[in-house]
Image (cartoon, rainbow over all chains, first blue to last red; front, side, top):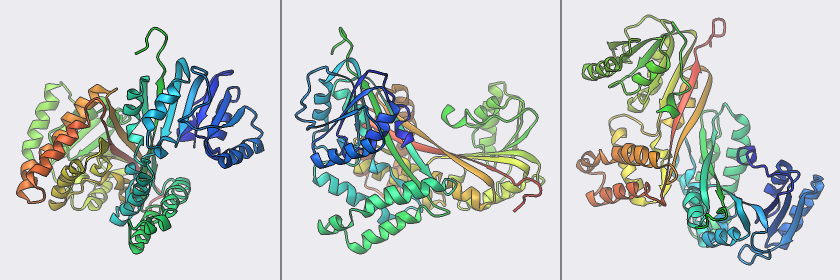
Amino acid sequence: MDLLHSDTSYPAGSKVLEAGCGVGAQTVTLARNSPDAQITSIDRSADSLKEARARVDSLGLTNVHFRQADIFALPFEQESFDHVFVCFVLEHLSRPSEALAALKTLLRPGGTITVIEGDHGSAYFHPDSATAREAIRCQVELQRRVGGNAMIGRQLYPLLVSAGFNAVHVSPRMVYVDAGRPDLADGFTRKTFAAMVEGVRESAIAAGIVEPEIFDAGIQALYRTAEEDGVFCYTFFKAVGIESLPGRRR
Amino acid sequence: MDLLHSDTSYPAGSKVLEAGCGVGAQTVTLARNSPDAQITSIDRSADSLKEARARVDSLGLTNVHFRQADIFALPFEQESFDHVFVCFVLEHLSRPSEALAALKTLLRPGGTITVIEGDHGSAYFHPDSATAREAIRCQVELQRRVGGNAMIGRQLYPLLVSAGFNAVHVSPRMVYVDAGRPDLADGFTRKTFAAMVEGVRESAIAAGIVEPEIFDAGIQALYRTAEEDGVFCYTFFKAVGIESLPGRRR
């Protein structure tokens, strides 16, 4: 999504680590926006990596090297990267601070880390709906139960600062959708957000955290916000921090 | 606040109506940003107008004419203004749609309306706090009980469209505050938002909608978000619509 990625472009020859590339959804944009950077994309899942590699290959992108690795057991030398890029990863981790600290050791002095996360607590809409909020809460609660945090976006500044990065700058990227923006109503409200929440229906019901009729009413209310008189708001957060310059180590 | 006003400047000679100027907090910025426009600022309260006039006079601004008037009984001829400006007013009205319709009749064809409103449902923060959310809810509930809507910001698009304005464009103006922005932590999180919510303490307790200890804990939690590891987010909405051009009337 251009809103999140357009201002990230790494110089020719720079060594970039994408930590947690998953199936490569972000890798493609990263590689396109930095065509002459050397990108190393890691994920702990071999299956995801396979899919990511196929996706990147099919687009003819040749500047990405894939490697199976865990963020908490990184197989790289200290200070071996110029930049680290982390997108939609911290939300899944029970120890995001430790992950950032581990990634920090891989950066050369003066190198940067870029972190992008969503925040499900940033979603609000018209018509407002208690059941829609309840359906979203199900996703937050399910993610919490597996150790994650679906509202981590707002925390990027303190997380990066406490990990020791300097000059941390966070820029929120708000997605605002009304009927004057029909592409977003369809592409974001309906097909991204509402569909994502709808996707946890079985898990949420099985976990006993919602009644089926409440959840279904909530999903209906979410889709309702994409109609002619509806409005939907959601905010992503993008943070950039710098690894201390030599002589300025903290 | 520059975030809200910097992109509103009316041409020399244009006739501008500021509807609901209150004590002139916005009038000053409006008059400064459009020094050669003829601004008419109305409010139904004579006391507020007096204060607004004193404020404008003390700054040497000479392009504002004040007049006591009610938005629902406007003492102007149809199509007598080039532009209408409404800031932090609709949130107080039980019939915002009717107010917009009434204001619309005052605009010449091709004239614009600009509406700015906050949305208390857009506030979220770190550390998150149920009591802080409860304290904010008190303000929303009190405003609702006097016929207002403290979450009207998100509704500006459908409101302006249903009032018949054309080419309605809404731009959210998010205030994002972390410790890297100490001026905002002090000026916005503490002295604007938390102080405003704190101001309804007695009314909320008297109305029986909150226990004092819950409210006080909530206020403390709100101020807490302005500390070193805290984050605070709030969004204003600014909408501009155009009165139909001749021959394009709906």
